[in-house]
Length: 532
Image (cartoon, rainbow, N blue to C red):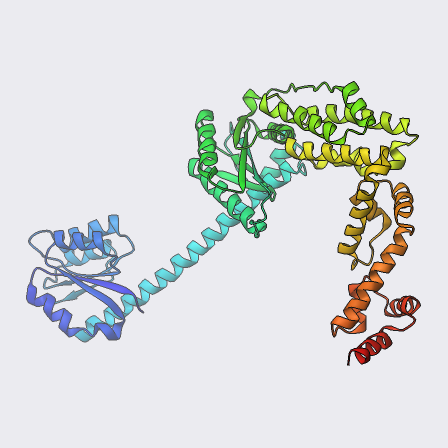
């Protein structure tokens, strides 16, 4: 019975003062008691404060209590009322009942009786509050349920768990009571948040969440009836359920990009679809995804499916020149030529897409295969499948592609001119092993994939350069690390084994004894005795 406000209205000042003094408001839990002497003053108080209970005289010269309560019922229907009057006429009482007044008390007021009436009023107000809160909670849960059902529908539709046929879609909507307009059309918008590499960006995932939240907030400023689907950490799909002016949404996306141009780490691209029916929405989303995948040059730009050009630039490699440079071992010259060749596409703003990269890559592999063949080497026995088949799919931009081609060129030069740079691959292998030696299941294939070479081929050149096999070298690194941990830390022997990539304590102890002629405990004790 707290946090309630009461308004006393009576044209007689002494009557108001009497009620103020005669009722123990603190005991009743009333927060504030307002007073007024006519209808106009009372209405002003209602406009500026929430009034829970109205105590009003009926017969007032500047607007009766009946007229005041009629106005209250229209604009503040939750307010309860008790009438106080010196008139006992039935007509007044009838009007009071009609306006749902809680009671009708006659002057002079018995303040104890008035307190009892106020207590009952407070109890009813509290019950109504609880009922309203319960109803609001139910409506909120109902709205959340509808929202979740709708979001689940969009997710299932985009993931193609619901077939894109009119019948299948309508069956799903009817089953889960999801309603759209008869002629409803929907606009999909794909947002791609791109992160430029930067060592200062320590909390990458947090930055992703903040950027995604920002884009979502900005899009919904333009259109609130939008469903957002997180396709990945860097891709958001917005589906607008209402007709949106196309130019307006393009301009809004451009504004978002402009606002974020000050960021050191973020680039944005927006891909705007077209208004379409539900059964055609998935195909439009697929087209937006293709547009994004084929965009290997542009950042901070808005693309529209209506102006999308499906043609692409076809690069023409200077194969003869490049073959001669690579044959002659002109490593710096060929790397510079390739870099300038690829960079020129960006400078000239060619219509370079992923298809362009595929064409280049296929022609470039032909050059590599030819050069390897002249040295009596087979490409599939030199390079890993990762080079020949899969790596291009992991490349997102033309700059990534350029770096990959330059790396592949260097790798090829090392194989066709082994006496000049053959040690560099072995050095990379050693570095990789040293950094990952604690991994128990570190395999020869893992190592070979890291340097993009065929495992058998890597094994041969590694042994040729070092005189030992990769497995022998790995064991040597593990044992030397074990010696270091045993002498420089107080880690338990079993933990030392785990840190060196051994999960079997007994096996670790046996290998260590074969390597040092002492088991791990004996080795630690011997070194400690020597130092003391």
